[in-house]
Image (tube, rainbow, N blue to C red; front, side):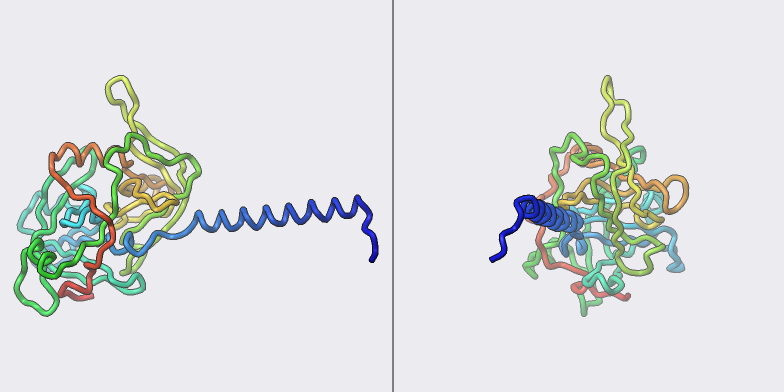
Amino acid sequence: MKRLDPFVLKRRLMLAMVSGLTLTLAIAFYASLAAVGTNEVLAVAEIQILDTKTNTVNAGSATFISPDGYLLTNYHVISPAVKDKTLPIVLCLTSDARKPPLCSPVGLELRAFNEQADLALLRLKLVLPKGSTKPTDFDTFVKEKQIVLNHVKIDRAATEENINLGDSVQILGYPVAGGKSITYTGGVVSGFERMQGGEDWVPWLIKTDAKLNPGNSGGAAFNQQNDFIGVPTLVRGGEGNIGYIISLPVVDAFLNATGLSISTTSPSGTLTGATFSGTR
């Protein structure tokens, strides 16, 4: 057996260690970029506000945050329906991310809104079950079918964004530029904007280079651990530039101010667009 020179042996060991470290880092890097799960995809809906001629007046995204039908969105998404309560609202739910969602007229109740914070809270009251021509009370529907609504879990006690500059950001929504199916975009935290609150500067907006377009508003933003971190709201400097996400502490303050008891049970469910009567 040929005896290796000690220097050569040491060099080979170092190369092996470096290769192993590189592989470990690569695995960790790709793992950190894992896309959001099926539950998160199914929890994000599209909202369309129509006029009397069924033309779309406004459209955007919304996210189910509880199994009892509460939806979080931007105020500017549903503002036409706030100002004119006769405008019908269509809710579109996806059952397969590769296909357009199923859209159905629903009964949505506006429970709270804050125009300055650009947040609104809706609750699903009436649904049209598949194969039926008569609307059904949502609470009765889920109780009879024994199903749970897909929804994201929100940390209701967050006081900070729990995300840092350069961290990964994941966005789900229904942007106009994304066609007719739910769209995922990713990027990083580009910065923060805060607002004055008494003597302190409190969390307000998360800046990101993740692509946001009209229609993303009201959707959901997640960190690389798939934790909900806020609501995408706008783009500055034109499409494809800096996007803004309303941070979780602001969302929590808004929800707490409503005084409503919103269930936050396990976010695994089975209610999807396939359960509703609708069209693509």
